[in-house]
Amino acid sequence: MGDKKAFALRINSDMLKELEAWAADEFRSTNGQIEYILHEALRTRKKMRRKTDDTNKSSDD
Image (cartoon, rainbow, N blue to C red; front, side, top):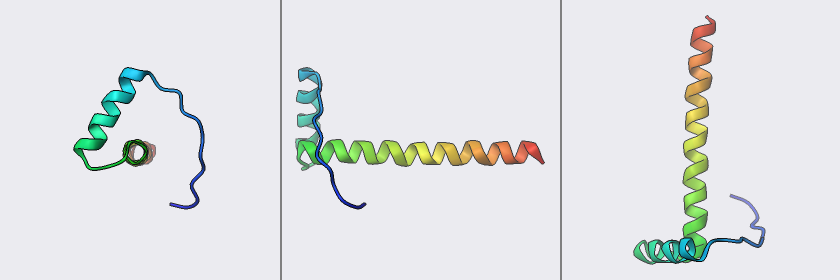
């Protein structure tokens, strides 16, 4: 994954409470849970892009 870089994140307090509870349910730190969610979102986005690219290639043929 590479080097990690710290940055400030402003988040609604209710959302933070939900993230903390979710993280605890999955035995992760809050930071680890946020990283996991972002990783999964990026992985899903790449899959969607790949499907879109494949569809565009098929229709161009």
